[in-house]
Image 1 (cartoon, rainbow, N blue to C red):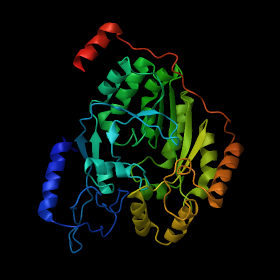
Image 2 (image 1 turned 90 degrees about the horizontal axis):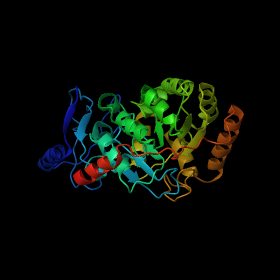
Image 3 (image 1 turned 90 degrees about the vertical axis):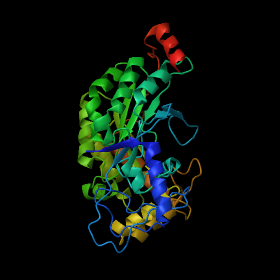
Image 4 (image 1 turned 30 degrees about the vertical axis):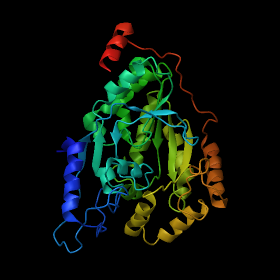
Length: 380
């Protein structure tokens, strides 16, 4: 069962409710099982917020996931950040049900009128026309063939993909056009689309990176509650690798004081499963993510909270976040250098090749010929 409404209708209804309530945010008494955020922080752009009554004595059910139609008229997004390894990406979904508490994309939900907390993982905006939009943009004469990243913001293989199959639809378009794509995901669901990935790989147009944060399933359940279990991610690496799909890993994020000691084990286990490359990124806590992460520590790891926050500040010049290009993905200082050296040595010891496979645009094509191009221009 799921709820599917228009984004505009839901937001209007919610806004009226907020005005009638005239209430301020109150933190939940207990974190919801199966959800990452223990609170629904205020949206910085809204003046009124929902309140959870502290005196409510009846059972408080966890909020269910709502799917909202996203009426975006384009699908490819561009960036010029020197810290990102791609220039263009596509995201069939906004918000992510995986619920990773540390997700740097949480503040983007505020632009849609929602909270970066529970709303981010329970109100999923679905771009129902994503494959059609992607095809139109790739067939346009203005498109310059280049690698497209899938999951530049939220995970393209989050649970919603099982029902809507929009990521698969986009991959089919990319295979038709032979345009290269690099996928990064925390979900074993990516192995479902091996057939399309193999077709793309025939033209050196596909790579998959599994994001692995920890090997501890009990930590995953509270930190990334609806992402695949670490064992399932390792299984996906094996399956993809045996099928010939170029597959690697990203230790993302490395969390100082919480998961950094697992770096050697993650690298070795993933290499044994068939991973061909490994990357890393330091924990980022921009905007509202920092207070959410602190409240998560209060709820789940109170005894380790100060140690973890101390380590994070140690790699961020005494702060919880540093947005400067060049350092935000790596950190700086003695402890950041220690983590980098540990990663480098462990990667070499595990036997990863020095070079990562590159993707090719040499086989790009625009199927359909001039008549289809003309039809698209007339309807666009």
